[in-house]
Image 1 (spheres, rainbow, N blue to C red):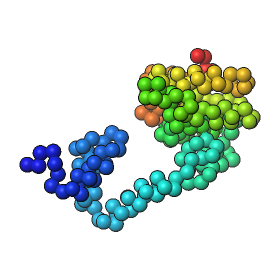
Image 2 (spheres, rainbow, N blue to C red; image 1 turned 45 degrees about the vertical axis):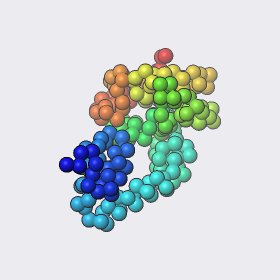
Image 3 (tube, rainbow, N blue to C red; image 1 turned 60 degrees about the horizontal axis):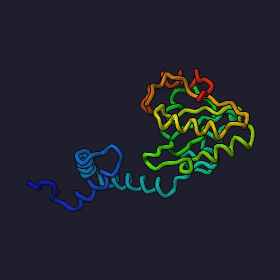
Image 4 (cartoon, rainbow, N blue to C red; image 1 turned 180 degrees about the vertical axis):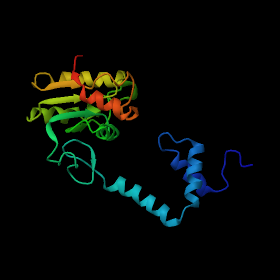
Length: 204
């Protein structure tokens, strides 16, 4: 028996690195490492090159902050989108979830997180400032707050509301089809779509 050690340092190193991924425990990391070990070398090289390319070459949209291959993401550069409506989300995952509903045709603003004092994340650690500048620059008539409905999400929504007060922009929030404490990425498309379509004016 090897107890907690592996028969190969190479395998141990691979398991350790894979185990750093969110939601991947040691056993899952071992299964993934053994799976990769059985794959053709070229496939594994392609995977490694894709991950390195993502980290080294991916950009963030200069308008909304979403990950992109170019300076401006495909959504912000799409002339068919309604640029007067800006949906504020926590991360790229939320953009993908909302886009999957087919119910939203405006543009986005990705905060890159939400206010969470317990995790040491304050207002200056997320992209609220650029959102305020974007609204004050004009051409934005509505800001949709599509944040998680837990305490951190509500705190972030209220902070944004305070920062945008006096700008004259309409501030709305997704309807309560999304339950308290739920993350958008785990909400089914129908429910999320209805929550977007039935959004209400934000009342802190």
